[in-house]
Length: 81
Image 1 (cartoon, rainbow, N blue to C red):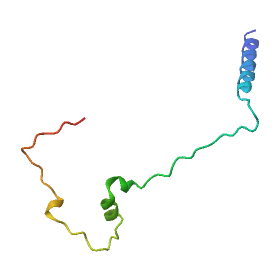
Image 2: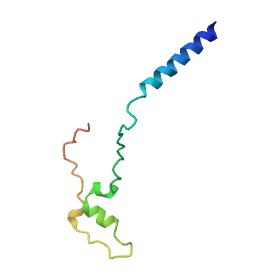
Image 3: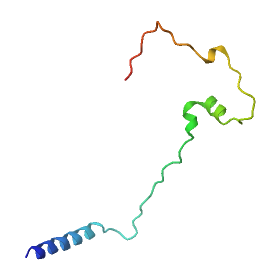
Image 4: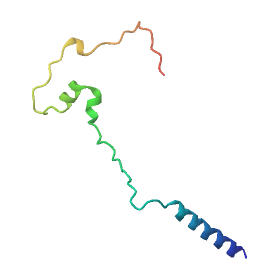
C-alpha cells in the first residue's frame, strides 16, 4: 500500500512539473554571455601596465628619489576597516 501511495505521488509530481514547463513553442529565451575578463594589469594603472608589458631586454626605467617614499614614524596610524 505504501508503494502505491509513493508511486502515485511521484506520478502526480511528474505530471505537475511537466505542466509547469509548458508555454508557447516559439518562446524566445535570450542567453547573455558574460563580458570577457579585463586585463588584470589595468586595475593598477596605465604606467604599471606599460612597465609590466615592457620587453625584458629593454632599457630599465629611470628611478627618481620621489619614487620611494620612506614611512614617517611620527605619523598617526590610519584606521583599517
